[in-house]
Image (spheres, helix red, strand yellow):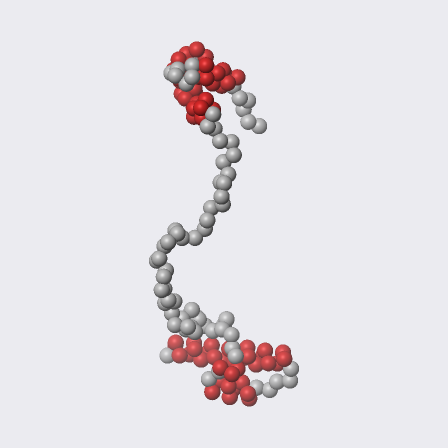
Length: 145
């Protein structure tokens, strides 16, 4: 539970207000028998100047939502082309996540695929997985040589 607010805090503001903000904080501190640093802290935390001038804003929300993105008129990305050619496989490490389409397989892999027996859709998936395994083992074999 937070500590109770000191009754001297409002008294200090009232003294500040009656003098129109033209009183030294040290004088307020002397009148209330408090340290000057305490009064200085209250003045900043409670925003005495804004309260005195009537410019204290209670609602701090933006009137318009903040726009996202780059600065208006920024031309840095104009004409930018991707740095890699379309369809490159640089990010492909071992082929485990590569999608295989039978019509795009090399001839040797198509021949292996067609030789595998199949009876259902599940068998087609198994054939593709076996093909992936054999292609990956071939890639690994090339790296080790």
